[in-house]
Image 1 (cartoon, helix red, strand yellow):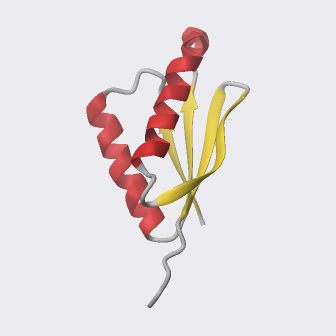
Image 2: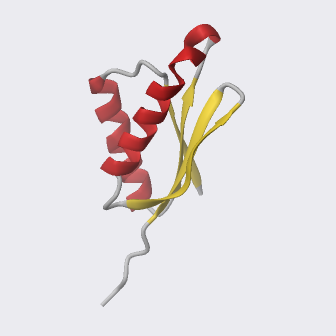
Length: 90
């Protein structure tokens, strides 16, 4: 199962935290998360901001999942995949 989370390059703190909670829930449910920053028009100038946002997300999700693919720019989207950590049963 693949869940998508979409960000804009100028996502503010509240929206970021809201989407972070969703990402954590998806990973805990065993779904892969495809996080991407969508650049509209001239916002492609903020490529670095988009990458920083995705790397921050990866860091915040470290204990819930592992990065499968580092942020990569594809057209107007910067995409990153995070897969859930396998839970070892005792």
